[in-house]
Image (spheres, protein in one colour):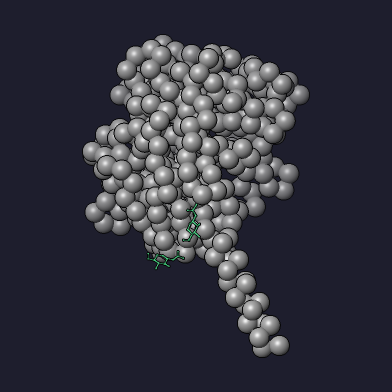
Length: 390
Ligand SMILES: *[C@@H]1O[C@H](CO)[C@@H](O)[C@H](O)[C@H]1NC(C)=O
Ligand SMILES: *[C@@H]1O[C@H](CO)[C@@H](O)[C@H](O)[C@H]1NC(C)=O
Ligand SMILES: *[C@@H]1O[C@H](CO)[C@@H](O)[C@H](O)[C@H]1NC(C)=O
């Protein structure tokens, strides 16, 4: 009996170790895409690849169903210079380029949508051009876009330097998969399109205005709870998170009602100068919003704001957590909610920290690793994105 239970315990320990081993994909603005492996406190680079010929990889969209990483290229060297690439990731941690399409560059984010698995097409947001462009998957070199939507403004927004024109910054679907959305930081609007799931074609719907002029919406997350659909938008310039209740009128578009905007810093606190909010994520009843350049936790140690989500969808500020790096442009929460991978852009460091699934609080540093060259302060270089590849 004693022998049996010991064998069982060993087997369980082994299983837990296997379950704890996790792969990550990282993009670096210098041109290289990396695969990482985290296991029980050990974080290693298992592969690096720049065979897609990307100049300025800016973003990774991970599609777990096809185990494919879609990497945007911010290359701003004129028309037809962006290379939108897809990478396969093997169980052994090797990256293989599976497709490359040519874009006009300036791409900063993508999101898959449509088709039977919700991953037959992909939308690409270009910041500088202010465009949303759609592609059929898989990507191929002969590809031309399905559609491209370009936006214009008559006059600059309240923050004329950053809001000189439309700047689309994200691509994501709603929980029904019937709508594609993109936050336009320049125009203070979340743009909305309805999806024709079989062809991938989009039809424009009325957008969702930012609550306050100058908010500069960047990224978003949806949440469904008790039959209600919520949308939370992180505002890069306003450094707030805005909450909306989303409904689906019979007109065929979606409608959003604002109910809250809350700071990414403690209530009534004085914000450090030159900070910018970056990325929002939700896990369970908790929401997270990263701050860049606040150095709340010391030199080159920025923060992630943590909130609990009430039954009415309202956010309550729980405190700032140590982002363990400088300019946390992206971070990613593991599916089981126990780990957060944080990508410091300027220090080019990936940190793995623990997360308490009960309290929602981000905890201690478990591992960190340098990935590629450091960036320059406030520069568009360094580590651009990190995501768990689950
Ligand atoms: C972590 O790395 C150390 C040092 O290389 C090694 O001794 C240890 O076995 C590794 N642990 C795991 C779980 O891989
Ligand atoms: C990750 O590390 C663990 C522990 O060293 C190892 O068992 C596993 O094979 C590694 N996975 C990859 C993809 O390298
Ligand atoms: C913030 O300031 C307002 C107005 O002075 C006050 O009512 C509120 O209690 C303050 N909040 C905190 C957390 O100190």
